Image 1 (tube, rainbow over the protein chains, first blue to last red):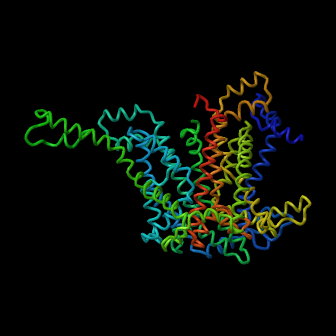
Image 2 (image 1 turned 30 degrees about the vertical axis):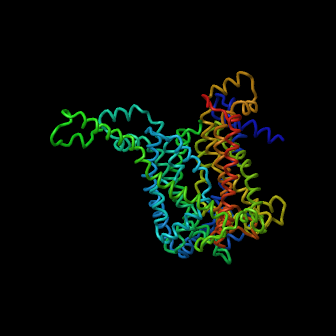
Image 3 (image 1 turned 60 degrees about the horizontal axis):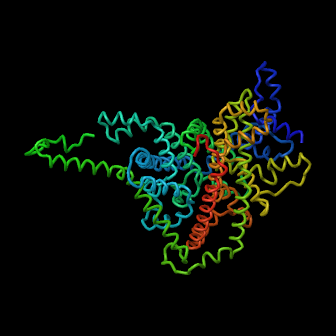
Length: 299
Length: 319
């Protein structure tokens, strides 16, 4: 019980912030440090374990007791074995192609739609925005089968068209909504001044709105790239062909192909697959808070 | 906006000498101005019609048929809906999903909130702790899936080693136990949500004056939590609740990668059920019915949450 009481006391920031010497403050917060350490230990353990085991020999991985925290000796065999098992460069190329093929047309079409919703007056705009919001909440599975049949009938399976064409048609209601919220927050005076100078809407969009919306656009780049890196359903349906498989699909085969599980190569490939995304997400995270505060979750 | 029509040299009468022409030109400009939003919206409108409206209607129709996607569909009325839980496999997936949603959504909210509160204590090194706490969320699902498989592994997994240290030498089969396996996914979902990030953003927006006032009133920390912090966080709670509910019903990737739904359907959830009906057994009519049930359930929950939200969500500065 004492533990819970301490936890409760130290979780809450207010009133715990007294002036004093640095050392005394650290002492005062020792319990908070303990809790944070425990939380970080649990949260980071899998990540640490992935890195640690990527450099272990198989014999070392087999030892469960006492726990072998660090690889000794360090081996790079796992990376070599894992790399040879599949054509990872091809899968990387496919992942990047998917990201680009979705990102560029989605950006173009969603920015146009969001601009119309945010900065233009036209009959039915509220109604269409309501429609957009309800489409946001609709499970993807509802449209999955008919879309697949439609694309199969048009002979698009085995091509990149299922990624490109819907993206050209702003098929991302969440992005339309978020961009619209963001565009709306940009002061009207700027675009009105530009209009008086004779700029039309496209110029205003290109010269004023897009530069000011850079943070949220950067966030969308991060989100779509990480979607291409993470998504399983789309590649399972449309990129089944060996030459088109993305990294996630290749990893699925890699994980699933274990008769006698190749833990070492699996950990090594997990590290390799994760590193670029960890970097990108880290870069993207500073946009998250900004995105959430400016897109107005708060009413 | 300078119109090319106006600047072009006019043959015969100029616009100044012909008021009719001027009116016609102005009307044309007004018309184009009025059509312009729809021009911007054109891709969106076409996309909604072709890739949203048509598929929705199509799947609604086919949910009343036997359909493999290629042969003509055969009308069978409500049988897809009535026979829903006929198969043991389907029943299992429905129960799994129900338990998953009911446990992981509230669990994830509570854990995410606690994590955010913990990372909001003003201690030295806070920025570093926050950065570290965000690291696990940046690991892509494929990497996470394989390391978690390893950690939960019965023979050489870290978890059974910890159990052994704590005095349970037998350990658990975890992912190879058909009853246990769904709980593994529930624990992973509770622990690894992005709720923390959003709560943390929300905590930064709670005005310090409220804390000060509460302190002057002599409130204890725990009272401040319930009278200040939690009410001020409700908009973020609403957002987290909705996104995690919708996400929980559609959970797909991690069980697909880690267990393929096994053993014995123990980790088959709703998304995989729809996927397999459609693309493994080619029972697309049945899959359509399943997805419509998901649609209706999601919508009922979303509407219910929104309806009740007025009574428990507090917006600073009014609604």
